[in-house]
Image 1 (tube, rainbow, N blue to C red):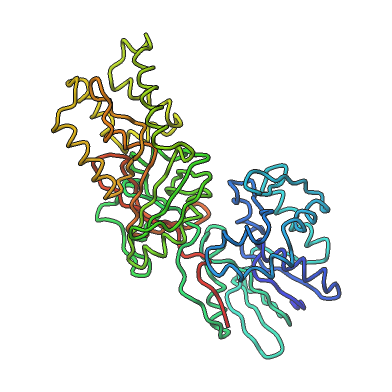
Image 2: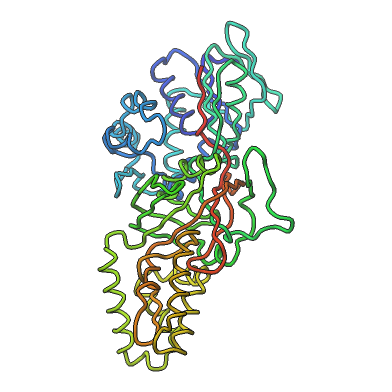
Length: 461
């Protein structure tokens, strides 16, 4: 089959390339070869299935969120600015909405509507969209290209566009085919490593008998399909909004971001996790030491939070309903007033020390010097080793008639220590990072990352 222009890959880039080719050169025949059963598979899962298809920030602000070579996409940005893309979608009948953070979504919040719009727009201008066509070989003869597919079909064209995506979501078809073809045509491909990826602390996944498999190319590579450990099971599904996240690399602040964060079957994800993941993973692969600090009360000072904890504790003590409660149960009530309720089970699973402190409280009206020293050493150790530790005050350890300031320095921040990278496939993507940890617990916390190498590598001449 002959076409003037062939695009390999029917994802967002491939569909837009086909539409632009057909509209700018209507006399040319344009075809898309997509190996999956339908186009736009990766688009379907973006934005948790809602499809955050663009961001309307101005370039100067938008470019600050590009972690490497921020000027590289500048021409593309101005050739198709976000507002122009929104106008195009509106003209094609798709209503849109802009939410917090300048993120644009279809008004229906259905990613499938965006995929259907792009595919229909291509067909309307004469593009032939062929699915189930896995290209296995490309040959150049000086006048054009010959393409051969796994099903035995062959195609030829004068112009070829490779839009196969990276390595990040094998389940959607992104298996890195384009990198090999780029090399075969003399292009240089820089080293690839995970970029937008889950960050997974130790004890989040159950370690298989014999340990996690080792991959020299990706130290600590692990399959995301592994069973969740107790902490992971209790944290998975928790979504935190308006929190702060600071990443530390070798003792220095690398990133400080604010927004939403998700605990998933892969670990720490969501907008914040992905924003810092590239820098974290790159450092981990180079032998660096990474710590993440999650601040659940970023708008409240330590002094304010400390006073709030004291006030809440006194309020709980005065409540007649507390008369029948143990100190442990009162501590759980306090936690419910200081953090999202869905986070408490995971917090306590990772941090048994909070309730252990309640036992101390039940047997001692005043903290002894040795107990106070133990707590001080404990919180200090957690900070040094970053055991998903809580610093600044909330799961306050009430010791007798007083609240230990050093124990209180535990709470509102969760610190995660990342020391290795682990990758592994998930439904629709590949992850990188290992098991998860303790919020003030006794077990060590080692964070790793997840997913396979993504587009963090580049292709050049």
